[in-house]
Length: 97
Picture (cartoon, helix red, strand yellow):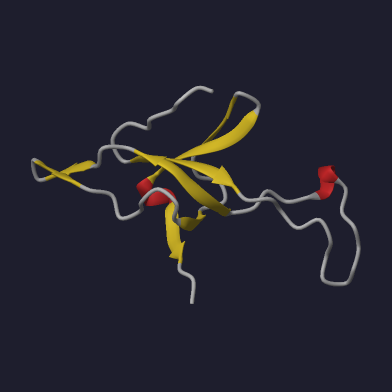
């Protein structure tokens, strides 16, 4: 398995699976599924430079996040699809109750 380490303020995310059945019970084919905007952080970069100082990212490995719909780049490594996002494309961290 390849290991990917994002650079700078970038984050490697594995997208969570989209809904296969609508609330009304209709089963969706793969072609009709919308890509989810939710994922799990797999790896993070070293941080971002602010005023000459390296600042840590707010997210950490294992966080569940919401990200902007059109942000980042999709990649495929060893048959698994990932998304590489800049920290600014992350909208929120999903916290468990």
